[in-house]
Image: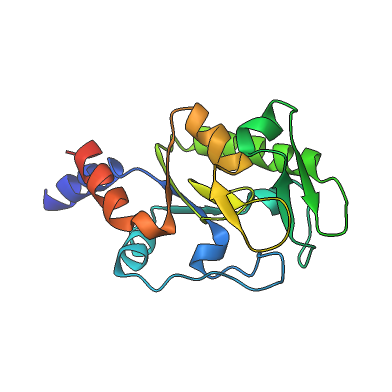
Length: 175
């Protein structure tokens, strides 16, 4: 009897979309990762809640690749055609960024995801800060392409710096 109760309780646990680099997958532009050491991430992983994805890889970019920044705007501007995602060598990778964002949204919808933890400062995943498009290390307020698309589709997007807020939200949703 208690197994049924546990099974029913676990079935209510929603998936959490997460940038693959944050859980140690070597998908960052330079072939490295941004692995987090976090009790929360470890617990969610053990609970099989994490749904890792790298929008840039999903969009067709490779590892390694040149760094990319959004020029003349942020994610919303890329999605509306007013800005471009350009790599450090001048290659336009806007299509790959949009394709990756759409693929990520499709995966999130398939798994009924309501929450995403994405890598801050990324041109795809930044939830509140991205680089300014000049490749000089300067950050500006703004969202990356994938973060914006998810947000526009009612998926709450958090950076890896806001895990306490994520935990609070998912605990509230699952009550």
